[in-house]
Length: 239
Ligand SMILES: C[S@@+](CC[C@H](N)C(=O)[O-])C[C@H]1O[C@@H](n2cnc3c(N)ncnc32)[C@H](O)[C@@H]1O
Image (cartoon, rainbow, N blue to C red; front, side, top):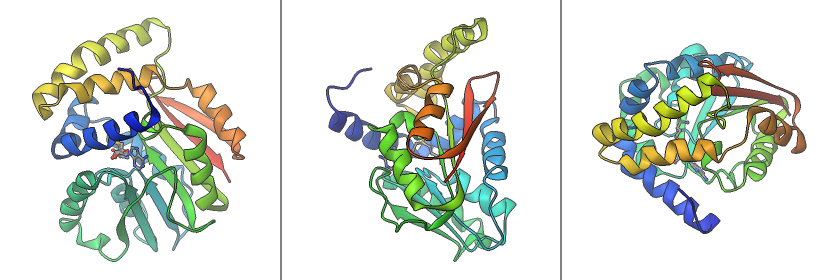
């Protein structure tokens, strides 16, 4: 899947997530055999959030990272889930009704990740899950995340990098390109959205390349962990 311009990709991504919002959570659980929750748990553990701290979950979607943060740290002062696809956050707000303990501490914000509507050094940690493949400028997105993070705070990126050219990478490619779009079509009725998913991973950076971009925007101590047999990467950097 190719786009003729940044604007075309931006619009496609926004409209595509609006189309799949109602089935997004179910498809994640099925496609990852429930493992995606484990990755978000690990991300939150690595965020190093202080008591009374503030977290930005940028590209929160239906709020999985935000909910996990408040589950692990009931003492957080504020978690902001921000996204540019309102139907995704509407699903999250419905989920929030079943989690009354998050009231007053989890808020939702309409925001473009390339132009975050928050002052400098607002958050103790800034996290994104499966955002970066979708943006039209990875350096700009990371620079914005660094800007709104407090000095000493962490920027965390959970993402599917370009599959490796190993035997397992080839097996994963087969699953990702041949099975996932069919499964996504059955579950969400939107096979193109789940053909875009592997295509966007193929067009994305390798983990070491993403580490370099994180360092180039000024993040320090950048390191990453490979998960799920090397098919998912969790990067962490310090502002
Ligand atoms: C694959 S979903 C991930 C949702 C959630 N973080 C998770 O872990 O399940 C990607 C999300 O990124 C959002 N997104 C993509 N580009 C964005 C942008 N430029 N600004 C804000 N949100 C964006 C989409 O709307 C979508 O909700």
